[in-house]
Each structure stands twice: as structure tokens, then as C-alpha cells.
Amino acid sequence: MSWMPRSVRSAFSWTFRPEEYVLLTASPSASPRSTKYRRRHSCSWRSFIRVFTLRKVLVSVTLVPVFLFLAIICQGIPPNYADIRSFEHRLPQHSLSKHQPQYLRFPGHLWGFGFNNVLQEAIMMSHLAYVSNVSFVFEDYTWSHLPLPWTIYDFALRPARIPFNALISGPTAGGPMSSAPNAPRAVSAEFYAQVCGGPESKKHIISSLNAPNDADGVVMIDWWVDQLASVEEPCIEIDSSAHDVFDRHFFGNPRILSLWESLIKSPMLTDFAWSPLVQAAVSRNFALLQPESAKDLYNAHSRKSLAGLVALHLRRGDYKRHCPNLAKWGADYMGINQHPSLPDRFDRSPYVNDTNARLSYYLDHCWPSTEQVVERLRRIRKEYPGLRRVYVLSNEWAWSLDGLKSALEEDGWDDLVSSTDIVLDSEQKHVAMAVDMAIAEKAEVFIGNGFSSLSSNVVMLRMAKGMEGESNRFL
Image (tube, rainbow, N blue to C red):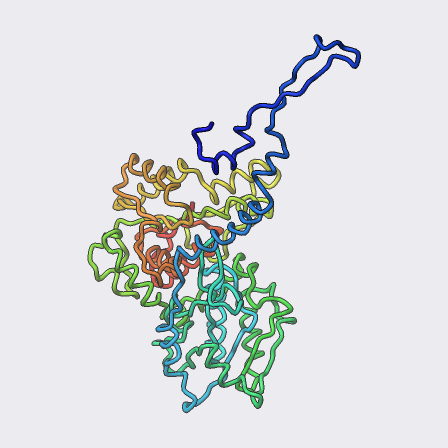
């Protein structure tokens, strides 16, 4: 190997050094003629260590987090939504010179959960404030309470806090109530801190300890209204350390349906709208959605649907573990998804004593295969012959939906568009779940996952707009 440079040869000297031989005798008394030679390879663990020295190992280990950091940063720095925060700051009710109503804040509100868990809770809390004639205090959509403006999720930066008006508009986020113009409007947590955060302010604390959490929704709301009616202090806070005011068991139970008539008449739903940021994203993608008229996208309160479009909520990711757990727990559909006007029922009673059959039944409705999805859409199309296109709301990777797209095209569908096809700017990227829901809300038919809070919220919003219950189906 003399042709190689000395520096290279020295670096790999253990590889190119001439083979060494040692004398090996058959026995101590052997004669010189019986002497044998054994070849000894220099490629030993000692030479291995000489190449991969401790220093090189330490350098390699040190570089791993550096490369991870660069990979995360290269995906972009999330926006701070400063313009939307300025909008919230300038809401007309955020004026100390005006008459101050009573304020109701829930410091123990959900955070670190998915948007739809937070949204359903915020709608119920703001509805309670409305029927109690007090001002609801709305919060940021919060993923982390760290002092940094960002946190890491799925090896990418995401905002630790997003102003609520980046996601929704309407009374729950401080918007006006057209049906109740004299009702006190919701205020931001920032404004509440100005009014009620001083040393002289007096807060009235109501504990959730004795609240009837297992009762019907009407009973629960009436109990809280009675508690609030006797309070004279302007600043009211709910101590939910004992248990949540509206917990997951409440939303996952038909007990919520006793509030249905009150809810669909509440300004929280009748005046609900997606934020201008979300609506702009829907309008931006008009070419993919193919509305009969662009006006169908512009009017946030229009009952007219995107004709020919069926929106399908195909939940993947964490549901691979969650769906078998639902079977183990014997869970039912979300409470709203059990509304009597909805045509699809979930009946687990025939499978109570058969573990394998029960699991299979749950997976059919919670984690369906591509073939099952195609068959389900085929049956829905027979009921709605005008359906031609499919929009898939999914947390699945784009390449994983290719098989479904091919199967649907073979089955006669014109096109499949999914969440991964939607064009979004840097601000809209972090509210993409709301963009999906805004599209699903306008679809002619919606097919949801009955166990999902996203599907439950879409069904609620569609029915609150006056869309027929029969247009909401489940897998």
C-alpha cells in the first residue's frame, strides 16, 4: 500500500500493516524442525479502540443534539400572532371606562390537550356564563406553560400559546351576540388580569367539590347558575381542583343531550364562526374544494353546503392504541354523536361476552381498513347520488393515503383531496385542524368517527346551522 499517502496509511495502519507471524512449537521438547508458524492478525479489539477513540465517540455524541436542533429549526420558527393579539386587546369591551359586569373565569381550564377537547369545554363554559348573565373570560389555546413562546412537538416547533381569535370568532372568543346584544361580552384573560389582578380586587371563589357532576346536563347547569346568582363580587373564579366542571365523561355521555335545545339556541352556537384566518385558508383553497359558487365559501353563516363533497374524518396516529382501549373500556360514541336524529347507531351489546368479536366491532368503526372505508363511502353515495368528491380530514401521512385515493378512483369517485393537500401559510399551518373542520362543516355530507371530539364538534356545528341530522354519518 505504498502508493497511499502516509497520513492515510497511518490512520488505517491496523488495516494495511503487514501480517505478523509468531513461532509456535508443538511442545517444549520439540526440535527446531518441528517448529510451526501461526499467523496473527493485527485487527484486534485494541486496534479497533485506537481508531474509534474516546474523543471521537464524545464528539459524535455531542453532535447528535446539534443536528436535531438544526433539523427542528430548519422547519421554521412559528409565528407569534401579534396582529391577532392586538385585535383582542382592542375589543370594545376591553375598556376600563365602561360599565364593568361580573366576570367568570375558569383557571383550571384544559391545556396541553387537542384543540377539540379545549373547544367543547370553552363552548360549555361560555354558555354557562351567558345563561348566568356574566362575562366569560376566554383563554389562549395553550399547549405549554413554559416561559418560551414555543414548544417542541413531533420534532418541530409549535407555538406554546395561540390566541383564541386565531382559531374561532363569535361570543366564546369575545365576539358580539346578535340575538342578545345586551348580554355581557366575553373578555380576554389579559384584560381580566387588569381588572381583577390588583391587590385591592376581591375574588369570589366557587369550588366544584359539591357540583352534581354525574347528573344530566340541565341539572349541572342549573346548579352552577344558582351558585353564581348569589355572588355580588365582580370577579368570580371556579376552583375545579376537586374535579373538572365539564369533564370528558360528561362529553362522552348522552347526559349532555338534555342541554341540546338550550345549546342550539345559545349565541355560542348561533353566532359561532371560524376566525378570519381560518376562513381565508378555506377560500384560498377554493380550487381544490370546487364550490359551485365562491360565495359558498365566503359566507361563514351560510347553510348552503359544498355540493357534491363528502368530508370524511379518518383518524389515525394515536388511535391505533386508543381504539383497542375503547373496546376494553366498553366506550360508546361521544354524547353529541348519540343524538336521536343521527341515523347511525353504535350497539356493542351483542359482543359484550366475546372479547375478540367486540374488538373487531370497535375497530370496524374506529380504525377501519381501506376496503371498509371504500365500502362505507359506496353505501353513502347510493343515498346521496350527487356525491362526487371526497375530502379526508386526517392526521395520516400523505403517502399513506395514496392507497385510499387509488381505491376510491377505481370505485368511481372523481377525486380525493386531504388535509395534506391544503395550501396554508405559516400562521394557518398551526390552526390547520380548524381549517379541516370549517371544510367539513360546509360539506354536503359528513362522515365522522363517533368516538372523536372533532367529529362531535363538527356534527354539533352543522346541526346548529340547520343542516339535517341525516347528513351526518359515522364510519
